[in-house]
Length: 246
Picture 1 (spheres, rainbow, N blue to C red):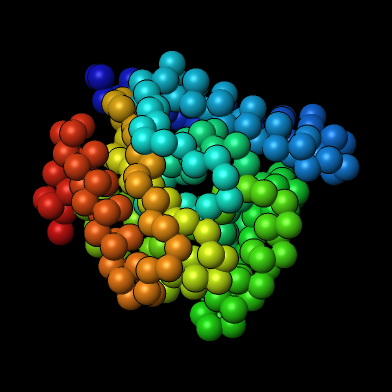
Picture 2: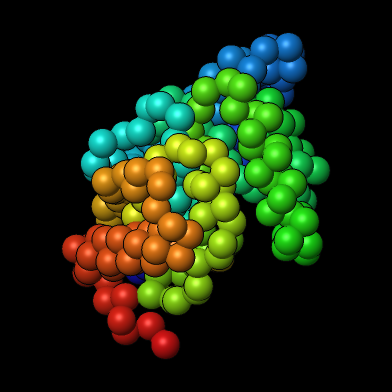
């Protein structure tokens, strides 16, 4: 009975947040089309509202730990669900995301992603995609912001291993900015697929920055080690065994 009720609450939550996304997108559209600040305010409003609704409709409390990056940095983040995107975007002053190109054609999301300065990547052409990504990012950073990239390239379910890709290291080298690792356990409560949302404490933890100048292989190894170790600890903190997934 409790599970069935939570599923119904989860379904209501999902309907509400996507309807709210469409509503906000349309209401802010005239402002956002002519002002990047307007697009930022629309997306900040959506993120904060979704975090509030997650707490009161499905029992997911969101918490940010560590020192939130505010300057020009690369954030190498663990990506488990849509929720960790929302938490990070709400926390940082001006988040810009490396995103798959297909999302540019998504209603509402595509227009606002362009206005925020998100960088699309063609994942089917790896070498060319990385080179173009570096060029596009350098151009976009004419305006300050925090660039969020997912080193594993996609959402990865809690406890599942997926190798880290070289794109984050290339950006780190090319931009010369510090890289702030970000760990999370959000996927324990808001999974990659399905309707059910589980109550609990979803955490994003900003870790100590990796300063510029670390060699590529060492950088990738350090990044993976700190993110995976801390993400596993956050999952264990809420009762999920990341080593129990096969």
